[in-house]
Image (cartoon, rainbow, N blue to C red; front, top):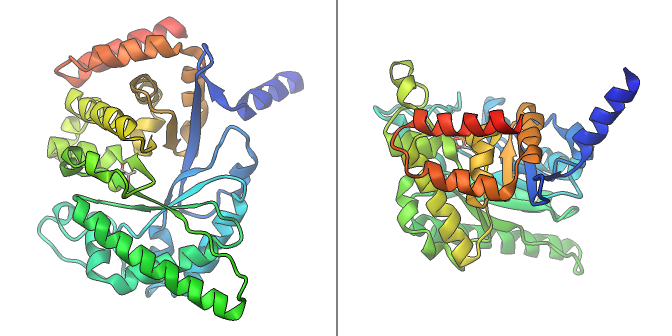
Length: 333
Ligand code: PEP
Ligand code: MG
């Protein structure tokens, strides 16, 4: 009835905390540009991953700086009171542009994400300039780099980012001497395992990072995430993946760099519980998963989640982890 529906709606709008009051911020993954309606909902604290690929895939050629600026401006404007993490172009692998074919024997190990855009700085610079211009009115932009596999790439991308920033600043101040151009936050995705052993060197180089559990799982387990023949081996609940994620939680915490999780694991209720137990306080997911994740987190106790997350790190198989997580969910539900 109406009263019950209203109550559900109120519940849906509250920000999330565990039963013992620990805040967990939920963000959404977006990219199609139709998510403006979600900006109004209080329990959605921003966009944790905006995939810019669609803007490039829906055209017959690379979108111009101005075309990109308009798209990004719309998203940043819709979410003007909340942070938006925009990822630079992440094509290659399974994501192809019709007008820029890439033919490789091993696309997932090939010319993907930041590798491609660093080899084509003109593509990267146009996108970064469009983003910086789009952010002038709202100052809520975080720029995030996909597929980073070593610190050298971070340095190179940072150099181009600074170049784009100063170009835009000069340009806008030429038109209006008093113009203020906010500098977006700058961060990286952690999704290539080589970064596990260069985490400490991120200190001073990035403002934030976010774990892409989809690719991290694929690369740690050497299992193509889209290959049916090995689909049974692709599992983010694999203890190796979870230990890697825990390591990232601990090191980023130690060096003081905020780290969120934006891969599918964050939108899985059991996964979200484990991540909260490891100490993550920012989770980004597809909108369809929000309410389920919210429900389990609200029912959970943060100390129990910590114990659960510690416990599963000693497992050797995904099914052992799932058994323990499901047992916990049955207890709270
Ligand atoms: C990931 O790899 O986990 C991720 C969030 O990025 P994508 O799925 O777009 O590769
Ligand atoms: Mg990825």
